[in-house]
Length: 114
Image 1 (cartoon, rainbow, N blue to C red):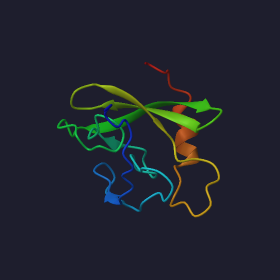
Image 2 (image 1 turned 60 degrees about the vertical axis):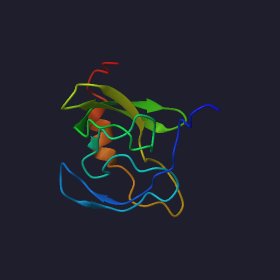
Image 3 (image 1 turned 120 degrees about the vertical axis):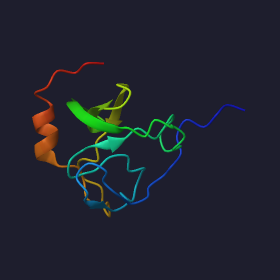
């Protein structure tokens, strides 16, 4: 049996970077703060919370994506690993707070390193 590559894990949390309370997204796994876009390096595969690094993931760039709206590139401040993540952006009825459009657009001016 092949290992599962995605585990839905849509729990609320307090952002380790900005300290704001983040509610569940409601339609998929929430993996970064919608206010500052920072994340934690806690997943091996999306939602599994199996990575022991636990470093803070800085949003370093973003690019438009025709299906997802935007993809955010995060770099771990502890181990340096890079990870792309879908932004919570656009129109999702009943969704929790979506990502800051202002921050997403600002990140598009930065070079994509991956």
